[in-house]
Length: 304
Ligand SMILES: NC(=O)c1ccc[n+]([C@@H]2O[C@H](COP(=O)([O-])OP(=O)(O)OC[C@H]3O[C@@H](n4cnc5c(N)ncnc54)[C@H](OP(=O)(O)O)[C@@H]3O)[C@@H](O)[C@H]2O)c1
Image (cartoon, rainbow, N blue to C red):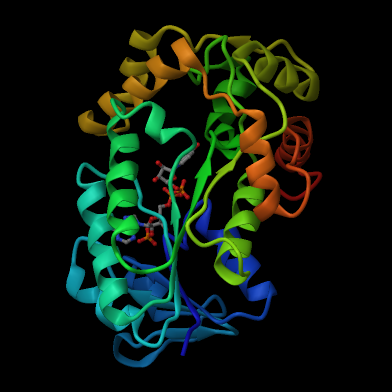
């Protein structure tokens, strides 16, 4: 029997959320589309016949938001749900399906992973999806909280090859973003799932500094000890590169988001920081520390 169902619990944000819940003694069930993961716990113990595999408080269960029939069994006995919807052309429909299934199963709290200031840029398709899902949450009858993170520091982990070649290619622009460490997003999510007093609150989760592209390139330059050139403002070049590895719908969506970052940034207000402090419980992590740790890990000197 699990206390919390994590949808998205095997991804970038979900993994530290699951770890944080387990560290607080909560039993967690993770939905995954991977039969391998669902059939084996981390220590390789297999569960019989597709049953959930136990892993000292964390179990993995086979399921897919695209197959709503898989959600009922995954929700059995669960009182809280973390809902993280991956980027998908039907993200809103899939998220709404999960809320409907949770309401049907009697779930008592949903914490939904949205995006910072999604309401301010509904022309970005995946921001619009987040707002559609929120509208359903608000009328679902299930107590809810949203976690609304800025751009993750950890997105830069995908850029290792470019950085090692002296280039920062992600389109961040000169206005700046209050980028945030995924570990802070996870801390806020765990608190929202387990502690009282958060119902109905939309929590921005943001980093402490406004980081423009030149700031980000400079921090990487300092720690890699080489000149890093920012080249992200050329969105046609970005699109040509992204189109080699991502589907067309996603390239279009991310291009609209990048245009928004270049024109408006993604900026936190004083009110955002004040609101966040109620759920985070500590000061947000600093980009310079993330880069220092990452460079140490890449050179074999520390954890990533
Ligand atoms: N990147 C950013 O800077 C940023 C900032 C703010 C908000 N966001 C939002 O954060 C979300 C992405 O989070 P992330 O980076 O942690 O994701 P991620 O690392 O890409 O992981 C995606 C997770 O979703 C699960 N998943 C994918 N499709 C699924 C389906 N059909 N049914 C059930 N589970 C499914 C995957 O599980 P399996 O593969 O195990 O099935 C995995 O656990 C997006 O909604 C994005 O808009 C991102």
